[in-house]
Image (cartoon, rainbow, N blue to C red; front, side, top):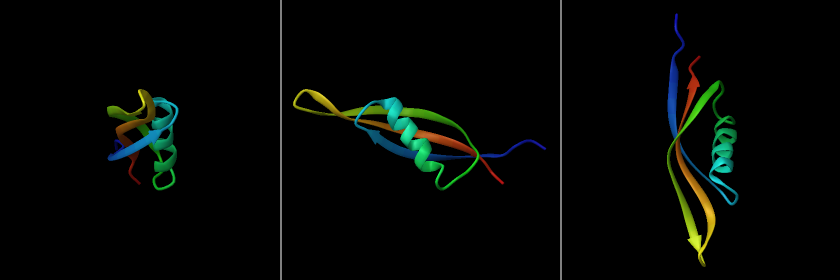
Length: 67
C-alpha cells in the first residue's frame, strides 16, 4: 500500500530571510501535524519601510503523511 499525503497551505514571516520564514512555517506546523515530508514555497514577498526590507513573507504548501 502506498503512503497518502495531505497538503496544507500556510503563511509565515521572518525579520531575517525567506529561508527563516520557511523554517518557522515548518516548526509551527509540526506542533499540529506530524510526518511532515516537504514544503513548497508558492510565493514570496517582502514588506519595505524606509527603503529597507523589514519582513520576509512566504506562502507555502506543507505536505505530511496521513495516519
